[in-house]
Length: 129
Image (cartoon, rainbow, N blue to C red):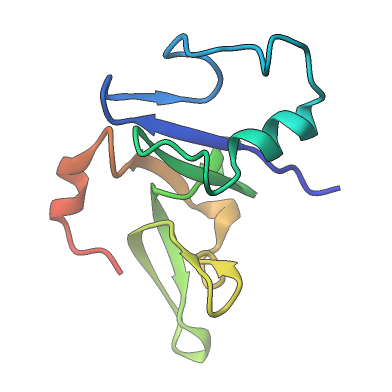
């Protein structure tokens, strides 16, 4: 089964939240709910809070075993097909038209996460695809 999870950048506190790093944990209507209920409740489009930028785990890990999320900046070999390989860096994005992440042509097992667009904005000054 594919692991589905999210992280979120808290724009007010300037911190990345993988769980409850911003101490925003709450009960849902005062009762415990299943994980599926909580996810469906909090991620319903009418409930999303613009305090956060939500990023989904891609299901992939880099060469160091670090999970790759949307918004991460990865560096590593890029497969140009018959033309060969080149080392590049890019911000991980989801492409809705293709229904996939921008990881198709990356050799993930040889790439690494070097930061993300929120905690490391200085890395965005470089040329990324």
